Length: 256
Ligand code: PGA
Image: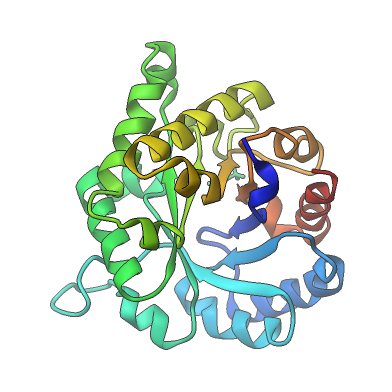
């Protein structure tokens, strides 16, 4: 729906991989390969790699993001990082609600909403992840799950703030498994998300939101996924750790 209204965003999610030195080396390799990207390029790196990533990416079109933030601005939360801390070091993007966080660290829809609020208050752009598990898909409740996750996370988010929200549809069964949703399956869910945004905000607001697909997106399948009318980019795990693969996905956005 009105794909031309949206600039695609390809974001890498490095998860818990690479040291600062390895970060710098990989970004050096990526820079020339992605320099003429027709989309926004973001790398969400581990907290300890942010400084090295920013230094390596300086002057290039690669923007640096984080993979999570706490919902409080500061306080007695051992081991956590707040949204204002990320903003203070020049981070522009933060992933919130990734399924690995929901599965292994008990991030709930409510804390995802609180993290989203904190990130928006701090001035960050949020990459909000939603998606069903395999059993939820098999039960036929994908639409309900994705709508509920999205709706709860966006409670209290204004239309103005929505301009700093990217939604990433990531079916849990496709993440890191080599199984990809078909282009039709992925587009169907992205269209449901956009329809929900139109209900919650307006058609214009919904048409402005970048809705990514994530889950085993790679150089071979990116073209077909990214050509879908409601898929405006990708959140890329494994393939974002390889310069050639990541740049091939970025190049796939030229052919919209
Ligand atoms: P994957 O990860 O591309 O390795 O499946 C995607 C993600 O977790 O964002």
